[in-house]
Length: 235
Ligand SMILES: C[S@@+](CC[C@H](N)C(=O)[O-])C[C@H]1O[C@@H](n2cnc3c(N)ncnc32)[C@H](O)[C@@H]1O
Image: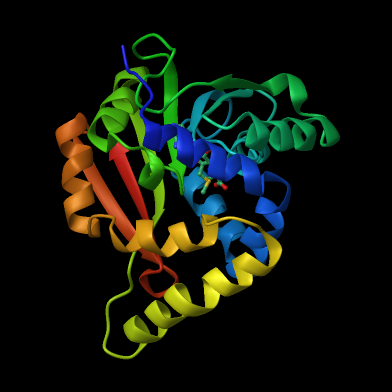
């Protein structure tokens, strides 16, 4: 049994407050790259067509919809999130694209997933594991609900290395991005984003966490100069 903490609640509320503008700001602040990142992540899940997929921290369902696009009519997705508002936007998007029946939404924390062991062929989490307060527990839960031989795919921001691009990126992330985000949304969500990314473990340490949580092997790939890292664990 997992009890939601104050921090869980405040993160969920923060995402609820930006839900109507979340997709617009994602496209703007990533200059459209977020779509490509999700495409690459979904391409790492199995099976290649059909299958049962879990999308943790599904938010406005962009990953869920990408899964359905790539995996075809035999695929189904369970989307889990703490924010009803984010999932409301996601549900509407699924309905608009005729996919409403193929995505089931659940309000639950990533730290305690309401599914039986081995229920899914693959589980993914895009830009969400950073927000899961008990990260080890969240990763163990994702491993638990994926069948043996299945995949656990994680897409998360990372801090790019390098003497030139690294500092430039940190400047954009700490000073420019929160201002642009602040223009379009009230509250502290776009100040929280750089804080949480800079506090996230480096890619090799996070890969180790996935292994410790139950992945037999973990590979990782750096995307867009290391702004984002794609981790693929085999269960
Ligand atoms: C940055 S958004 C990512 C949404 C989506 N995966 C995407 O690719 O755009 C993070 C999401 O994580 C959700 N979240 C935060 N903490 C969570 C937790 N402990 N369990 C499940 N979802 C959580 C938030 O409500 C929010 O919708």
